Length: 162
Ligand SMILES: [Cu+2]
Image 1 (tube, rainbow, N blue to C red):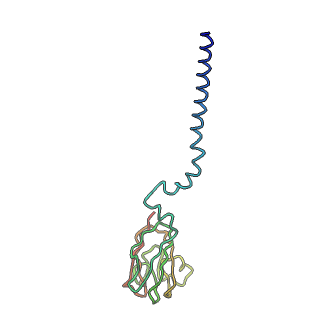
Image 2 (image 1 turned 90 degrees about the horizontal axis):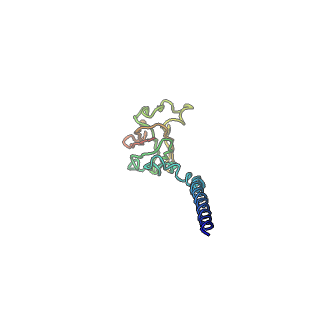
Image 3 (image 1 turned 90 degrees about the vertical axis):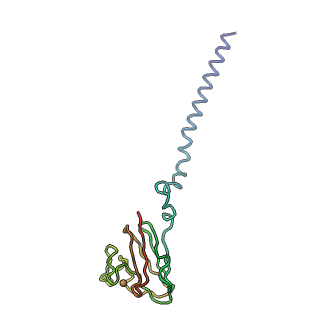
């Protein structure tokens, strides 16, 4: 009788060990099954949290009125398209500092206006009518001053971060 009880205990222990092992395997594999969906949502915010919002925003907008550019300082991530929107009632001509040559932003120069390079420089190269927009993609990291070439008293800064 004691032998039978001993055998039952041994069998129960073996069964318990097997179940414990299966349970552990389930716990080990469970996170793997969940991770692909959680990875896609956390992939971008993972490394630098301060710029999460800017990463999600495809572009930034600056409005130009009779009072000038607003906001006058805009911080964007490299590769952001900045849309300058003319609401001033007059033509405007956004362009890199420094007036009148526009050479501060790398590669830019008013001398390139009218050439095939004109579309790649921080320079509208012409007056843009009120009610219209002019946009530029900032790929150079730095703090870039700009102005309205038609009214150089109006200026602003685009800060481009990594
Ligand atoms: Cu100018």
